[in-house]
Image (cartoon, rainbow, N blue to C red; front, top):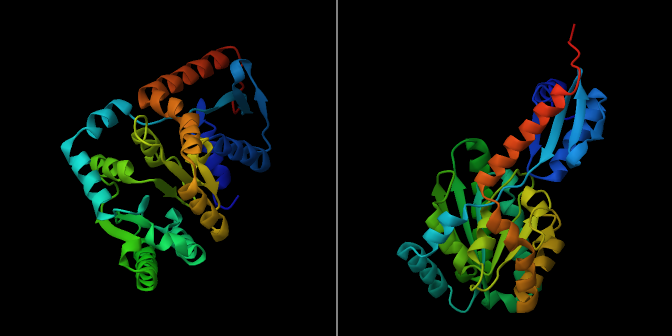
Length: 309
């Protein structure tokens, strides 16, 4: 609705045989947009599929989740570089619980909102001032230079303000040029962190929280993910604490809850997600997509096509 060429974009997507999404909420938004803008309705098909009829053809709308490559993570977790960097981070922040985050330095990543919530946590719960550290890594891909410059200016200002007020030990902040932090560095952070906080205000699928859940599989102690309700991953990880990044009080309460959570509840929350995270690699996702495409082809052969004239 907000795009000048929204109708043309929908028309283009509906020329596909299958339109797939990672999260049900995204599929629901697509179906609602197709109804509001183009007047199309959807129907349930055999096998739990959803179909949208457009210009005499039927398009399948599917939801198929994908997880991480566990064989790669398992191999890297025992790399000396991962173990050494993880041990270094634990030693550097000894006596403090680590809240970790890796974000692109752009407004939609919600880094500034996260820092505001962290500042409020230290203000409202002074007991945490000597017991926690926010380990924040900001990636600078140089794809949206004005956005990144504005975001970094705001983030640096907030980091300086928090460190000035509460001491330099409460934030471990670094920037890195590039769009991705190498996986060995990520795993070192995940294995050292007690909580991961992921607070984008708009995002597709980001696998970092799933990496974290798997990196904390048994026999490691379970970690807790705090996930924005605007992220696709919040609909995938049932054990995550969901927050609205704009609701600072909610974020503060969730951080305090995650840091205070009993080992039993932490383990139970990991148990809700570890099976999916461990058994849904990209190869399986690809096979599911191909199956859906085959189903769409079967559907179309059973449907009489009507041309555009």
